[in-house]
Image (cartoon, rainbow, N blue to C red; front, side, top):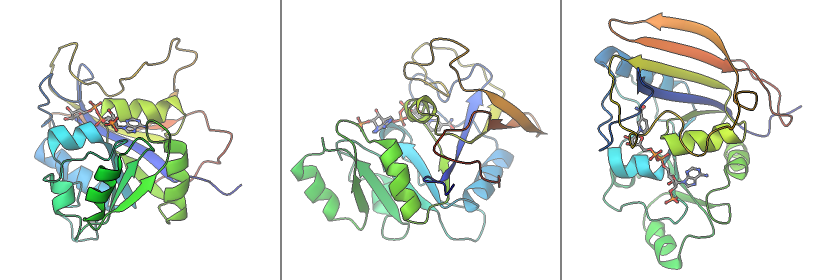
Length: 230
Ligand SMILES: NC(=O)c1ccc[n+]([C@@H]2O[C@H](COP(=O)([O-])OP(=O)(O)OC[C@H]3O[C@@H](n4cnc5c(N)ncnc54)[C@H](OP(=O)(O)O)[C@@H]3O)[C@@H](O)[C@H]2O)c1
């Protein structure tokens, strides 16, 4: 069966206690070596996706640095189309292809504002972005491999719908605590372990003071067949 969606890889650096950032959004967890690994991983995919709050808090570029190659497409989940005009994603969108995925909640004014930028706006979903529909559209746009780079709310949206194929997670040597600090997967979460996402450990890489865990997701959605990994 032809896959209707790109192959998805969940990518993040987390602390030993599972946090993506501190409660005030300090997320600089990766070492230099790990950053190089992430840039290599980015260079192998067709697109990178993040949620709107990650853009607001981290102001990332989501580009490939340290390696000479073309940048993957950047995809932002932004239901209302209110992404900050001054963020680095919009400031660099004439150089790096960028998709802003909005829902029908996006107002006329914000859609008009986005038209002033060389970005592709995809409208899908009623309240929040319908990620199943979005993945179908991305596949039609020849995006075969998609890196999901968080944050916790976005990661949950994908896991909830069984839309993750692999997870490559760095465990950074920090303990942050804080019940308001974002974790690898937030949202409602599964009610039982039986319903949770099951993983199979494929590889462990030990770097100086951190480890990188590479998991494959065990269950396969009925809509797709498994694709070979990177
Ligand atoms: N350590 C790491 O590797 C790493 C990586 C990434 C992020 N982070 C950290 O994570 C934190 C942000 O994460 P977060 O969980 O608060 O937010 P997030 O996942 O970055 O963004 C969530 C937002 O995306 C929008 N969205 C639209 N459609 C959605 C959909 N279908 N599913 C999910 N979200 C959708 C929603 O905002 P609208 O309703 O406005 O559209 C939602 O509130 C930051 O502190 C950042 O530093 C860390």
